[in-house]
Image (cartoon, rainbow, N blue to C red; front, side, top):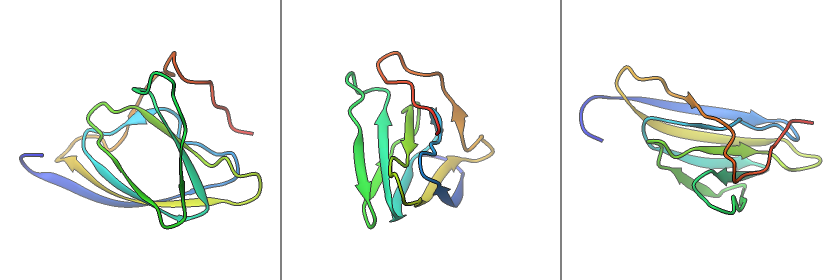
Length: 109
């Protein structure tokens, strides 16, 4: 990323079954699961295969139009993530996205 950036450190807590909805960011994020398990769905994946991350795992969200959804699919435990986000200065941190046709409709309990 070139130019000025805003840096955010965000902690998200996901109760059982909670999800983010489909979205993207205008810049990259490094996400670490600090409790529980998070399942990530990527709209660009033709099969929308879920990727599971457990406590201590990290993954990169490239942003820049990479539409995705994070969900706590546990039946009993909340999940927590911490994200370090680099966003071009002055831009919105989150950009809502439509439900991708290739991914299942995911609802909260």
